[in-house]
Structure formats: structure tokens, C-alpha cells
Image (cartoon, rainbow, N blue to C red; front, side):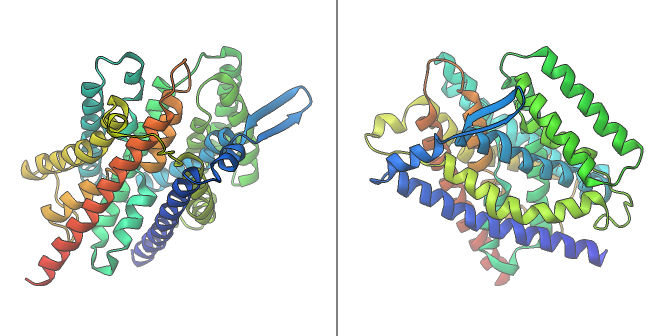
Length: 395
């Protein structure tokens, strides 16, 4: 048990440091996008990158390689984390699953409802309903880490578990609602490689190279099929085996998860934030802030998340269906509910998918709404938890 607690601490340490780096990358993107260097910033994102093997060619701007390629690695890590938590961690029993699962459901539904309500009469804008429903776990844990060791470990584990369910909901949403016209031949071939991953798992194959090679083929097929390519990442993550649930660290899945953490936390997510968080504020006035798209996103993240998550926690705890995490009280849980409104990475990612088709451009509005909502949630959550910890420390 002590080794498992230590592995959680190491994981949270990675995510917290990555969250702080995310803040820096996002701030840098904002500075560059609103400086004389904005032209170079856009040229960097539009840089053409091509890979060709025989007749198969992938030719995309750098921004799409980051969003379609590197983010698939992030979702691979999510798949590994989800599998570990279900087998040996905080999601292995009904009692442990219920509280974060219901909290995540509330935190997904209420922000989406607020966005839809604000954008009901604005046609294409409704495509962005899922943008404020996402939580950026790295950024949220980074803010929580700024509060030091006084924060109960149970609170961090709860926030992590909510974010895992949140990410799972985002994956389903991407696959079902944000999929372009399907190529059935590519989808059929993707299914073949998906079955190949399942066979490797069932036969107890422990070579990670085998899963990576099949996973790359699956990624290409999913990318060509019209389904977003990050779905391939979650499939590979779930397929890589834990050979011994009693010792998850010394297994292909555990080793892969451990090795990917620093790359995702210190490179992939900050690069994604830098590529997607550059909001050009030139010419943005009060009318821009009050446009239904940024307004719906900002209010969904800041108001919807705290209402949805904390309301669900209150309902489940008061009815006796679940208990609060060890060391936490309702005040601290409300502070964490505020932090779930930090949407940055996942909200920006869903935003790139929501409006990528059609003759309308809400990119600036999406970034503005995500930035405002996430910053309000981060500042309010940090201040509230800090005050609550100080009060608990004086009693």
C-alpha cells in the first residue's frame, strides 16, 4: 500500500510541475500573439509538415500534427491511467467510483446546458456545446500544488479521478459528435488493427514495440477515416497489459505510463497550450466579450463547472451513497469544484474540432472564452482553498 501511495505522489508531482509549465506556455502564447512577433507565431503554426511512405501521404500544417498526433500520445496516457485506476487504484470498486463519476457527470452536463442556453438562437454556435465541459487536469493540479503540502492527498486523488472521467466523456463526445464524413474503408481497416491490439493483449504479448507498431497503423487509419485520431491513443493505452495487477509498476503498461508522464507533462501539453492559447486581443471590445460563444464558454467553465461538480458531490454525500475523500470537507470540495472549471488544454482541443467545418470562424471567441473562464476558475479556486486551509489550520 505504501508503494502505491508513493506512486500516486510521484504522478501528482509530475502533473503539478506540468501544470505550472502549462501556465508559462499559455502566457507566452498570449504575449507573442499580441506582439510584433504574431506573424512569426502564425507562420510557425502553419508550417507544412509532410510524411510519405509509398502512395500513403500525410501532409498537414504543424498545428494539426500537434492536435492530431501529439494529443494522441496524451490520450494514450489517459488510457493507461484509466486502466490502472480501474484495476488497482481509486476506481476499482463501486464506492470509490461513485463520487468522482457523479461529480464528473454533473460537471459535464451543467456547463454544456449553460452554453446551449446562451447560444440557443445562434445556429452553428451550438456546435461548441462540449467546450466548457472539459477539465485540464495538469493545469488544475498545478494550481493545487501551489498551495503546498497542506492539501490532503485524498483531495488531489479526487480531482484526478474526476478529470479521468471527464477525459473519458470527452473521448466519447469527440468520437460521436465531432467526427467528419466517414471513410468506411479506413474505418474497417482501423477495426482490423483494433482487433489486432485485442489479440496481442489476450495472448499476453508483453513487447511494447508490437503495440506501438499496431497503434501507429491504427492511428493512420483512424485519421483517414474521419474519426478524430486521438481515439486511437485511448485504444492503445487500454490494450497495453498490466501483467500483474499486484505489481502494476513492473509491467508493460506501468513502465509505459511512467516513461510517458514527463514527456506529456513537460513537452506535449505545454506545446499544445502554446499552439492553441494565442488569443489576439487587438480590436476586442465589450461586444466581443459578450458574444454568445465566448460568453457561453466562460460562464460554462466558471459557473457551470462549480455548480455541476459541487451539486453532485453534495447530493451523493448527503444521501449517504458515498463519503468525502480522507482529509477533505465540503468547503475544500467546493474549492476543487472551482478548479474543475480550468478547461485550457481539453477545452481548446474540443474547440478546434467543434468549428473546424463550415464557413464560420469562432477560433478567437473560443480561445477568449476558454482563457477568461479558466483564469477566473483558477484564481477563485486557489483563493478559496487557501482561505479554507488557513481556517482549518487555526481550529
